Each structure stands twice: as structure tokens, then as C-alpha cells.
Image (tube, rainbow, N blue to C red):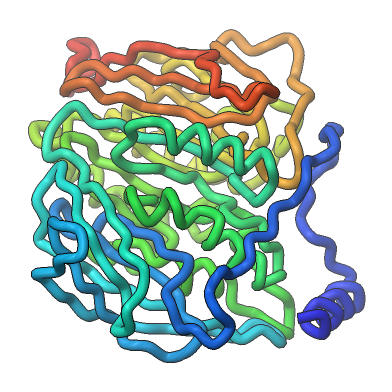
Length: 430
């Protein structure tokens, strides 16, 4: 491991590359302690670790995990502890990155499953630990936890602890997961860190800039670790890339977009989004939520003028507006900000509410400087770590709450708003 890190350091030094800090224009406070979660398995053991789950269609779940050595991609599962009446098999992959050689990553889809039910499962062929998960409900009410730019610090630990105390059904993560930044063993640590939560509820993620990990000449393929470790259900929504996809859960259609892949009108992502929005059945899914990484609206001094924000907004904002998207969640900026319903930089009752929530706990700290005066379309902004909760009560009403992390290790509700779906807004019906 020391040799790998030394080799990586020399490579980056020779290439003149720096790990992405994106600190120009503002100062971040000192970060808290970095967490390094080591494997608690016996070195000779091939037990599953880094277990996480994701939704596949409306009645299946994908179980993903890693083993150090080759192992069958099988999952035994059932509705009673220790009793597994069903079994499923899947696929296995691995990857190399400079001097790093990964373990074996397994993905198994299980189902069909009953909604709002607890299942118990075991990964692999050898006797190992039992895990459990709860499926989302088939209808409202439905609760999402939302947290971006997590990283692996003591702040991250607080955010995850707060989320674990909530009765959420699905977690949405708008990019920047591990902050491994080329150090592949940090991806392993992140997988172990989030396993207690991610093995129990589906985590639906999209990529951020810290997932790119592309090194000219030496490793020219971007998103190698991300695509190997976090395989999302993109095929089910007709997407040709793990970097963007969509899914339905209860009465909500969620669209996960890729800020760091092509998004111009000639791109596959644009055409996929255009076709997908045209097919949304608002009778079945009266709410439409979009997840991106780089925010289209931002009054923080951080990350101003970036093409992933400006050009993607220019390309796709009209699609989202015409599709009557209700909410857009973003990360990237390490602070919290909520905008009013907006379109083309002006308040618009038929536009989506844009929310930046890149405050999960990353090692870079907070983006503390805002542009003054505050734009009229910015309703609430604060540079604090935390997470959000979207409680979709029914087809017309939802409650959004942002919870700030306090120094006494409590999650304090600091911003909230009741939202009415655009489907139920007479002036916005098409």
C-alpha cells in the first residue's frame, strides 16, 4: 500500500496534477479528522464487505458487494431472519488502476419483492453475516433522504448518523461520494463507512467531478472506480451509460443526470432525457425530481462560471421546464441553498425549485462566502454541513426540510417549505 501511494504521488507530481480542491475565490475552514474505515474481516476471509443496495425497476433490488478473492455472485434472501427461501445469481467485475488491483465486485438483482416489506439476505456462497433491507412503499407517503458531497470525515460520520435516525425510504446522492481522488483504497474505506446504511435502504447516486479520476496517458478512462463499484440501473431506463438514468418509486419519477458527460443537444444524454420526459406518465408519477451535480443556480462564490453548470443549464433547462420538473437537487458547492421556482434566472411559478445540498461532510470543508446582495430568487442559504429530507405526502403536497449538523451532534431543522406539485398547479397544466 505504501508503494502504491508513493507511486501515485510521483505520477501526479510529474504530470503537474493536483488533487481537486476547487478553492479559488473563497476560503474553507479547517477540515475535521479524516475517517479511514478498515476491513474488520479476517485477512484470510472472503466475507462480503462494502454492501449496498439500489432500486431496479419497481419491484427488484440490486445487491452489490466486494470480496477480496473470486466468489460466486449469489444472494440468498427471504422474509424471516435466517430463513432464505429464495436465491438469485448475478455478475462479477473488477478493475485495475495504476498499481491498484481491486477485489471482486458482485451485483445481484433480487425479486420480485413486495412493497414496504423487510427482507433478510446473505451475500456469497460461504456462511457470512446476515443483512436486511426494507423495500419502499408502492404508494404515498414516501420519504427521501438527500445528501451530497459526502466524503469521509467526522462531519460525514455525523451526517450519516443523523440520516440513520430518520425513517427514510430511499437516499439520493447528487455526486462526489468518496473523495478518493485517485487513491483507490479510499474507495474501499468509503464502501465500509456507508455499509450500515446503504445495505438497509436503496442508495441512488450520480457522479460528480471527484469520480472522474482520469490521468492523461497513464489512465485515460474516466469513472473507472465509480462505474465498477456503484452500478446503477441505467439499462432499465433505456440509458446507454451508468452516468445517467431514471427510475420510478411510488408516485415519483426520479431522473439522475450526468454533469460530467456530454449534455449538448447532439449528445446521447440529451436525446435520452428528451425522450424520457415525453414518456413520463404524470397519472402514475405526479412528481418529477431531477438530480445533477454542478448546480445551475448558485449565489455562492464557489464554482462560479463552470461549463458543467452554465452550458448544461443552457442545453437542458428548457427540457426540464417544459417537462414540468418539480425539483432539482445539486451538490458540488459545499453549502446549502434553496431557490424559489425559477426559469432562465427569473422567478417562475412553473419552473422547478433548485436546491444545492453539497454539504454532506467532505474533507475540503465549507464554502463560506456568498455573493452579495443575495439574489431575489435565493430564498435561503447557509454554509453548514447537513442533509435534507423530502417527504412526499401525496400527489399534490410534499414537505422539504434541511437539517443542519450542530456541534452537539444533533440534526436541527433549519429550513423547510411545503411544495405543491406542478401537476396540481392549474396555471402550469399543459
